[in-house]
Length: 463
Image: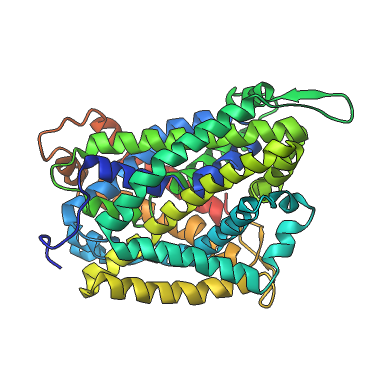
């Protein structure tokens, strides 16, 4: 496919909103709050912000610059940078291929919960065992997975401008308004439990934002750092080919440095607001103990929070799951687009055919993931000690092994093989200034590779 025929975002705003919509997904709305709650609130947030402005910035800049420089999807982009590094494109493309099916399964869970709240029947989702009972069914999870996958495929089929960019321009402002609204509401909450103890949203805010080193050991601090590092992959959509693909659609006139800064700000703000709308409200009704709900925080703990709110909880729950659904669909679209761009650039086939083939693969794999909680259920102990089913194994392989590997190899390629000037020249191609150039060079050559290597060692249980 020639560069002239290649689609591109309409303007810089379109690129920023698309990039932000990819970054703002379940990683922000779901994963960030429970990690913040688990890792001492403010301490996690401080570590996350520092890493986002350094480590995350370096990876995001690298991928977007590679995408625009080559005008290729991830499968072929790295080979254009250095012909002997085409294998890195294969690894980078493998990440979204693995993620897409199970991400759409989780998107199906969100769709089911949203449907219940639309019917104003959401309080039943607060019943003990509801979530487990739902995902262990055979038919319903597959149905909602297919619905979510179908919506994702439709947007990507419509293309870069009429699909991805148009969706991002509509959904992102709405999502931002709803997140801010729920965040403000969560701070107004107050609840007195059976022991006569009254907890408020403002007290939850203090726990969430104010760093505390009380009782934190060196091991605890290391876990906070690695959790924040892992979260960055989700939050800014790096090491999964997405930002390479989106960068390839950015026009040569786009100010990449300014765009990257805006994507960072937007993404970090949504992550912090997501924690703000979840952590204080869970604290109000269930105390500090309730804040350790882990991944089940969204599907198990929060419905109970909405139940405790009384009548208004139905409306708040509805707005919350609309927000989560918007975040999930924008990210799933970006995952599918990363694969689609790669297939189109590599095999030169039409977008419709590429989307159909990839969707068919995701459909088969997604059904297998759904059946992993019933017909195909088994338990497998991962190298990090976690007990896993099919979804967990795919998540571990893509997020704990492949993504750090892709990011590490990207740093080696840019930092030591083709040199940072390859990216810097692309960032400044129109004469733009690059004020964080020194930070970029130091991160991509030295700091990021060390952090990523440590993260890999921890993932395989060696650290």
